[in-house]
Length: 422
Image 1: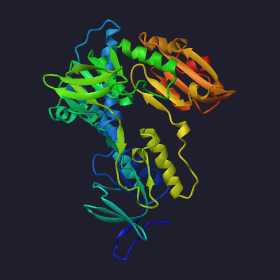
Image 2 (image 1 turned 30 degrees about the vertical axis):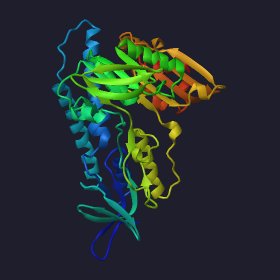
Image 3 (image 1 turned 180 degrees about the vertical axis):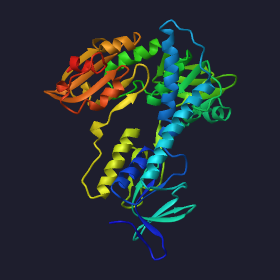
């Protein structure tokens, strides 16, 4: 059924989407593909955290830093790229991708309202109140995203005020490159920021309260991965209780480990302690909440799958987001990629494991960085896979798709490792 107008000429939209990040723009484009009248609300920049202050700028930073680091492995001695050049490159990539996204939304006929959806009420239709007026829709998909967690640590707020501590968002706005960096949080974002700094030759310490990070990764794979990161200069300070942050000439983190008080200092503290959902629409009956806002799996590609599933549910199809098929990647060097179950949760399964040295292309490109692929399977069915090594991010999504043994892999390519390990 198409859109209609109320007696006061107010348009009734088929689907209202709140938020213009990966979940939001995917939902809008998918609904428009099925000829639905769609309105999209975005209070900030289109593309959300991922495009503007997360995935895309960080990978842009890593692209430049990786070229710089790898050049030394081949006898080159380039000048260090300036932080202004690195930021400019990231902004150019953001602009290019954003322009493409805005073009897609425009050509799909999606109406965009640059305002916050302040309140939603349901009666005959959903009423969305904004600073630009009220809008009405039959269905609502809320994709309001997430915000960074700032831990309650004595002295941290003072360090932030003095610009000695920055969030991962403010990391992209730094005007100079610190020599010694502390990173609060050894998850994916923390490790990727650490990878950037170690590529640039800086000293980096990652601090985390967990004794063991990356809980889905098997011990042997995690050990190999962390060994490679440590060889590049990362230091891991795990299983600590942070007592206080002090700020003078340097920023100092005072912590307790095994009953002993100690400290570590640096020029800058980057906060990468996780994210939490934003948005207050959980109480509104019948709306669909997708992406980071539902707190299930804070990954852009999860958000995309959830958004598509929500649209097809509105269209009357029985479609669910399949979280068992969600891959994860840390874009460090080497990359760490994984999907499905691990060996510790599938003790009766068969395990096949190969070093990445069985891939000729990997050997050529890796500059001596060690890697490994591990497959957990039951008979011919692959239950899970974990990969340490650059190129794993391009392979991991296909690992549960089946029939991998029927594919002819080009030579030389990183994908040849699948023929070896299957």
